[in-house]
Image 1 (cartoon, rainbow, N blue to C red):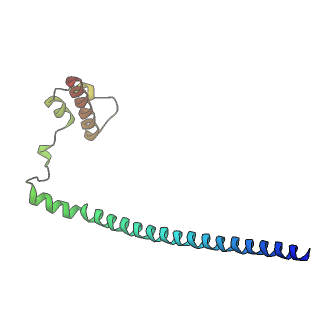
Image 2: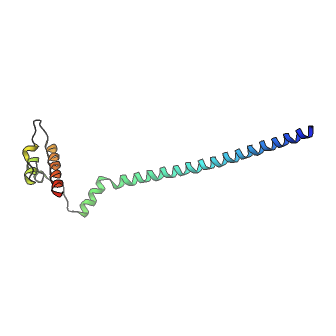
Image 3: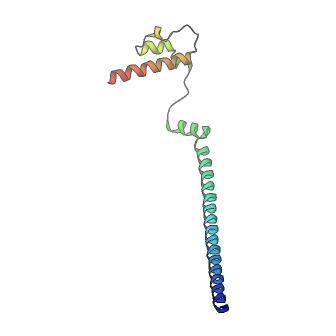
Length: 127
């Protein structure tokens, strides 16, 4: 009887040791995977930082102004080149009276309204 109990306890001890070994291996593998993921995350964050720096450089207004000056003949517009809302409406056949409302509005708002009406007219003509 003692031999059977001893053999049974040895088998239970061996199974427990094997289970602990498998758990340690599993934990070690998961830690290695976490380390790989964290390393990948750091690399991606560096890449994002580099891309943001590149975007900041590419969108630099001084740089863009130099390129525009070198590649095009465009110059800043002066006051004579800008149309008022009424002039815009007259030039494109939009009813200028429909732009007027009771509330005072700036030329910018009137220009935007005229552009919106022109877009509506063009889309209606296209159909």
